[in-house]
Image (cartoon, rainbow, N blue to C red; front, side, top):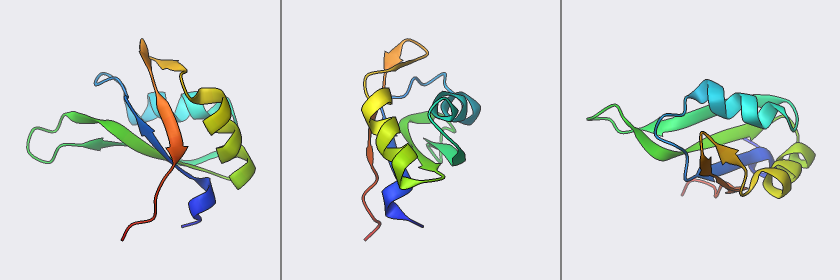
Length: 85
């Protein structure tokens, strides 16, 4: 996975779906994947997720333009995802 195009998104509304996340980021550019992380036991959103953009340029634009943007009445925070240890 190219780390320059993988984004960490936090403060996501618990009502948001993967589809909501994908549609928001598609306003910036092509999205490879959009996934909200769910709690294994309760199956409820944990309030954060990951979006992989097609290019590093689109990822950079998404950070600039979508940090603070509202998704279902909550301002999201977007940053580059850190690589897994």
